[in-house]
Length: 65
Image (cartoon, rainbow, N blue to C red; front, side, top):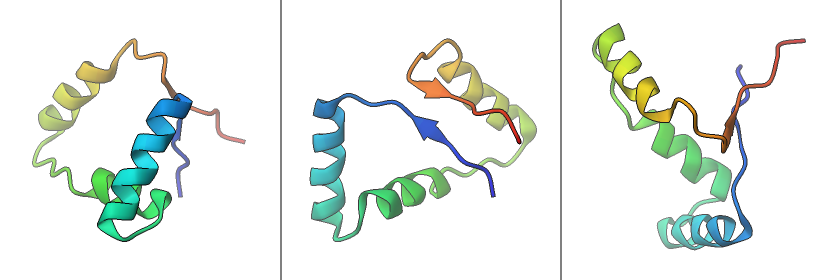
């Protein structure tokens, strides 16, 4: 299983916690649901989504061990 690490500010953490609580789940479960709700039909769809995040310093990919 891959690990996705996202750096968020304290303000963003609080917002995530509020949204997760309103949805009745933990923050981790809420984030997993958000990620899995995105449907990609073709590789082009995935690449278009990826392009929107390129250069975002809040996202970090950890090297495989």
